[in-house]
Image 1 (cartoon, rainbow, N blue to C red):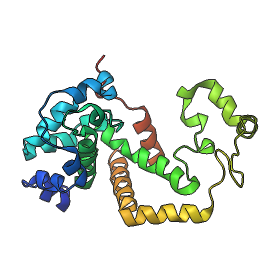
Image 2: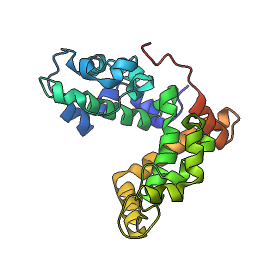
Image 3: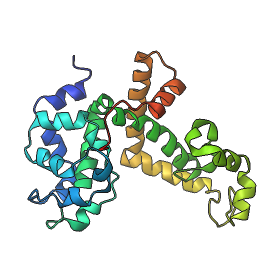
Image 4: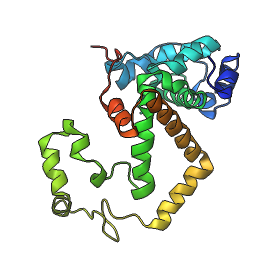
Length: 242
């Protein structure tokens, strides 16, 4: 059953047309010769079932069905966007940029909700961007709580309980005025960040991911917090090479 108009338009032979409009695809795909250098150098390919060469090949077919499968897949979420691929490619292709374009289209069409790793964008959009917009940092120590990250171990529990003393001994300036690591970012600068999000479409993108996540949580009969815990702990897919 078609879920929404955007998705309906996308699957009617238009996926490649939408993809090619993304400047990252135009800049990242330059007469690929399928030599496999990108896969050989890729850190993610060493651990995940991920082959950037195959992804580029599938995109080059311009086959909407193959592209749709990519947009639904776990595969496009394995890339770390380190751009090692472009440093070694003899044609200066950038598989990482192609992945970015695929991820963007996956979110726009709602197909990211078809994969476990795609659904985890809900956490990334909620937590990371919350920190950026409210504190000016991707990771803000006071928000990275031990209770939600037991895997960090008891050392982190102690560190979290002694953050101010610890950062002071390290010579940082946690939440302080002026300069220094982890200083408090002025509100006027945070307001500028928010404007950047609004103008570039990032705010709209975050709202789209959040709405899709909350809808999924409702379908599963979960609260938002329960859904977040599910995303943090669920790992059903065969993601790794070993």
